[in-house]
Image (tube, rainbow, N blue to C red):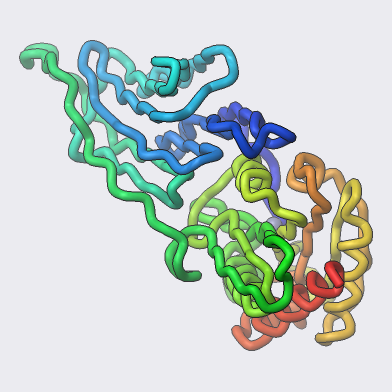
Length: 351
Ligand code: ZN
């Protein structure tokens, strides 16, 4: 649960349009930001989109167009720093949102080094390379350079790095029930690091994938906020769940104290608003299913619990610094049983 806050360096502008009653008709930008620390532009839209990306000179700037998208907000800009000067967004044409990342006047980059990555057809990362000092004597490039955009992946399997969508008519024939599963941390943020270097981000991703598989087998659709070792802020995690119209939100974490406190072990389940019933059922189902100490169901103001519109829980599956929990959480078999126990609680909740 370490580091579970918005980072100072991060600038984000969650645009939560289309999350209420209009969600069915809106085609909007749910979220975007330029992540200065990772030099990455991040975009989540509420429908599938194929961006076009180009590099334009004088000053060097990356121009990203999102066809078919409405901003539904006033244009915005944000100063970033010396290397990347600013990022801005506006409605370029009535049907196209344009995002611009402008470099400082002494810097440039090579278009072939820009990586455009579709995590899903509505989630894109545009990764800037290391910037180069501009050579003032070089002839200025005048025409925009198009940057190749790959096809976004389509959700097919748990290993694709995209949300899993597995329809199964057996248990819930009346409309789909979508469960948002949120593996904490990821990428440069390891979360808690415990005994033997056990890392929260890896433990919780494995449990989350197994939980998604378990739910799919039982007729529920699971959408993972991340399905790979990838850093993701809190606002897009919420945006992904809202966009999927998830009925519940289940955030998976592991806890930590100092390594000098190996005696503290156990399960904690958190809720904020309307998640109490869900928290209680999942917590008790886990305690009945596997041997883990009970540290209680607790109320806490965690961002993902407060900002989600559906019942939400955050499960601290154990202490990576605890002697007993660390040994258990290191075991793939235990993680499978933890995932199944959480999943059984979810099924119980909908029964
Ligand atoms: Zn955590």
